[in-house]
Length: 144
Image 1: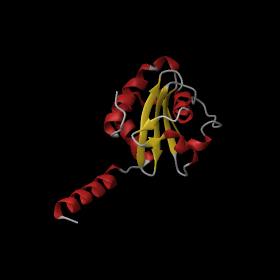
Image 2: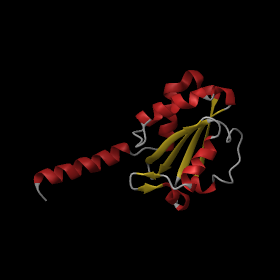
Image 3: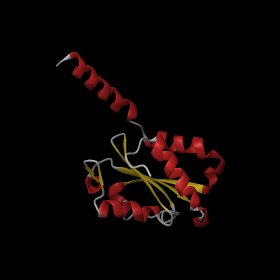
């Protein structure tokens, strides 16, 4: 291995290590930026495989979804009426993110989803702000 390719490989390994994070870190990033309006939201964490049967207050509300696997953010998105529904549509429709297929999350051990939903459906406009902020901060592949 030449010196340049070895350095490039080492950089990629370092970059991978630095971009890994926990769901708690994602929550903290959200809370730090949106603390003045945090009481408008609820945070729901669930295994992707059990999302279809999961039932919790506010789960059918507007909000932001963050797909997460092995310390990596796979996708960030939002829905202005029902974030759970939109997240499930990505799996059903097998949305592709570069070479990653969303359907594969359904059977992946440890695949999680974080829903940052609004308590009052009339506050739906906050979902767009949170999505745009998290996409930029979490280096999501889909922006805009």
